[in-house]
Image 1 (tube, rainbow, N blue to C red):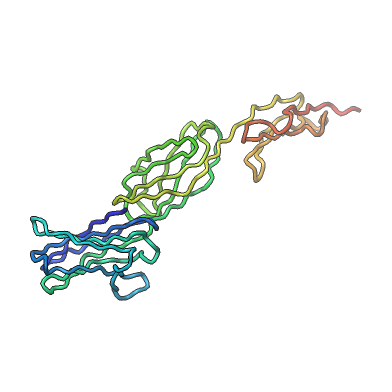
Image 2 (cartoon, helix red, strand yellow):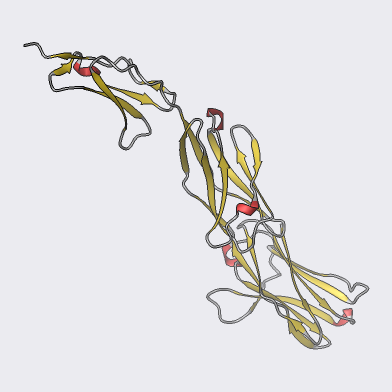
Amino acid sequence: GINAEYGVLLLCEMVMAKSVISAVLGQTVTLQVYFTATHFSEVTVSWERKGQQQSDWIAVPTELLSYRTSTSDTDQNGVMSTSLLIQSLAKSDVADYRAVVLVLNQRQTSDIIKITVAETKAYPHLVSVFEGSSANISVEIIIEQKPISVELIHRERMKTRIVALQDYSTSRPFILSYHLQNIMSSDSGHYTFRIRLNGGGSMTSKEILLRVKQHCRPPVTPVNTMISKENIAGLEDYEYVVRCKSDDLVFLFEKQSRVICDTTIGRYTTDNVLTPCTYIQK
């Protein structure tokens, strides 16, 4: 779960600090507030929340199984704590929270604790590069606080890489990125970011597919021709095309003027023998 500790509630003084915690839907969230009290038997604690569409604070329905509250004993310094545990965070739980403490019939409220939803967005979902080159695997994250740690996981190889947080962007949207160098065919596959949130919760990004393409060995340039490598619109493959060097030359084999390289396997889709050009018979 995510354990958030915020602020101090005093009998005669309130230390205000608006705090925000990013949590994942479905995970356990624990909110905790500290305060001072010398008469434990006369302390009553409750929790309130206010949603984005609400103008008034309402009591958290702690009688439901999805919520649990607890209050600690007073320690040697007269400090107590109260906590609210949300068993499985739902969209309706995303709101502002505060603890309400009655001590000697004096009502005081804690600092506001705001819960927001942590999300990730991979961009792009497909990264396609040639073997031997480099690429960035990146994800956009929607959180309020810098994560504690981030790992990049390669599913097929069950390999984990640590993501350096000095490369973490400090302006929104927050971007996590890992730079892969000298990519090999074994690097192809599905990648996810595992993010440890501030406070102990964690989240996993959607998968990003890395496709490692392979070059075909360039064909031999036929006699009396010029050869060029051209991309094929809408495809990851490319082709080699030959043209005659001059207007008084023609293809010897008309259907062999181009060959297509299948970059998935690094092989030509047909025989890679291209046609030469010959002089026009007069």
